[in-house]
Length: 154
Image (cartoon, rainbow, N blue to C red):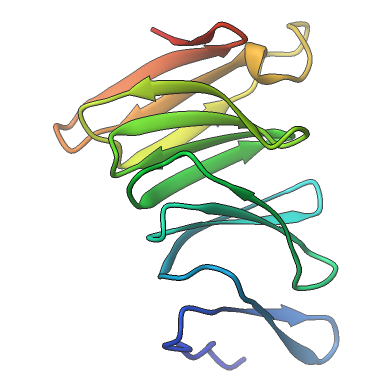
């Protein structure tokens, strides 16, 4: 299997294998794409251009642009319709992908990675109110937050 080659023009190339290789190019970011996630038939990309784009997996079409970060979107994690993003603007943001709205923002000293942990079975189902979010920092710490309708809290 061939390795995808770097485009050099800000485009992300995705190779899909379904019997024969195909290449789809998702255009829209104005700078490097540095993180990807997938959820519920969507491809989600985070970029140095400070935006998060939600793409259709069926065709290379941008369905939504999530704006709110003021620096690189460094990392993301997704579970169902909830997306957590971490940025070099020192924030962790929680997004509701059904409304494309930022439902919580937490300021941090730094953010290197994020991880969403959905509720245990028997807990509240769905929605950002039921998730824990963990993020790792440059200072060597992992912090835990609860994402709720009133915002993110320790």
